[in-house]
Length: 500
Image (cartoon, rainbow, N blue to C red):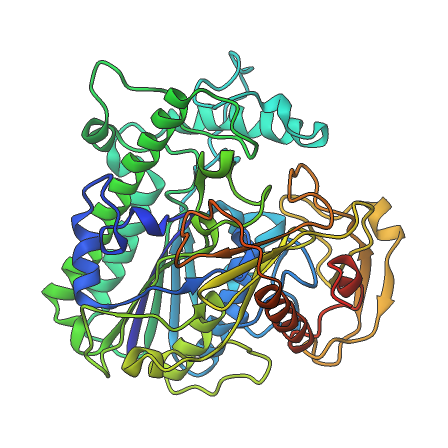
C-alpha cells in the first residue's frame, strides 16, 4: 500500500469548481473531484497552522490545552507510527513554520524530509542592506496591529522583499520546488510498496505572491496591483483594494491548481490509482473581506475559514466522482491513514478512520468542535454552527505543555517564572505538564465578551443572519460540554466560556 497527501495552506472551499466556485478556472481541481470522493461537510478543528498540523499527527484536538506549539513528547505522531511499522514516510514542504521554534518537532517524525525556503518573510536570503522603506505589497497599515507585534511584522516585511529577489522564474518559487521534489519521489518510487509521501505547500497562504504567468491570467497587463499581503485586521480599505487582493489570491490559486495537475499526471502515467491512496486537503480557509475581515484567527471562525475542502481516493473501494455529507474533521486523517496501512490506531486518537464514510457515507460523529486557544469556541452538527465568545476579557487560561515555545520564539523567562506543575491529562501518558498563564487572545476584535452567535449554514452559508433559536443553541451547548469532557479539557475552560 502507498499513500500521497497533497496539503495546501489557506485553501478556500468555495473557490473550487466542484464546490461551486466560478471566479477562476481550476481544471485540475475539477479533474481531482472526478477521480476522488469529495467531502461536503469537512471542518477544521484546531487553528491555525501548526495546531492544525499537530492534530494531523495526533488525531485529536489540541487547542483546548495550549496555543501554537510543537509536538509534545507524549503526542502520538501518525508519520512516526507508520515509520516504526516499516512504512517509509517522506515530507517535502515549503511551510517555513516547521523550522521555527513553534514547529521544530514535526518534520523529524518522518523518515526523511525536505524544506524549501523563502515563503512569508522566512529568514532565508541574506542581505545586510537596510530596507528602502515599507513593503509595497502590504495592504493597509501595520500600525493597526498590537504594538508588541509590529516589530515582528516589520522584520517579516523587510525579509520578504529580499526573498522575492531570488524568485524570478516560476521554477524558483518554493511551491514549484516542493512539487518538483514530490514528483521526483513518485517517479523514482512508484514501483515500490509501503510508503507515504506528504507534499505540502504554504500556498495559497498570504502573501499572495504568484509567478508572472499566473498573474497574467487574472490581471490586465497594464493594471497589475502590487498589493498581495493583507493584515490580520478589520477591512478598512476601499472595495477596489479588496477586489485587487482577491485577484492576487486567485492567481496564486491557479498556481496551486497547476501543481496539483502534475501529481495527477503521475497517478495517470503509472496507474497509481490501483493501489495508492490520494488525500488532498488544507488546514483552514481565509477571509478576503467577507464579514469585514482579512485573514483568520482574529475573528470568529466563519465558514470561509472553518468549512474546508477534502478529497480522498481509496484504491480499495475504487469510488470516484461522488460526494459525502457526513461530518468529518482534520482529526480524522491520521486514523484514516493508519487504518489504510493496517496499523493499530492509538487509543488517544479521537478522530475516526473514514473508510466507511467513503464507502457508504456512514457517520463517524454527530458534533465537531473547532477554534483557536483562548479565542471564540465553535461547535457544529454540520447544519448549525454555534459560536461562543469568552465570558471574560481578563484572562484565566493556561498553556499546558512540556514544550515551552511560542510560534517563533521560546517562552520568556518571565512567563516561565509563573509556571507550576499540573497533574497529567488523559492523553499525556502519565506525564505531568507545566501550567503556564496564557491570558486572553490578543489583537482580536472577536465577538463581544459573553456573546453567542447561531447560524444555519445550510440555509445561510454566508452567515449573514444569526438565528434566535434557544432550543438549538441549548442542544449545541450541551454537545460542546460533552466534547470538552471527551477531550479532558482544563476545568477553567468551562468558566471561561460560560459552560458550567
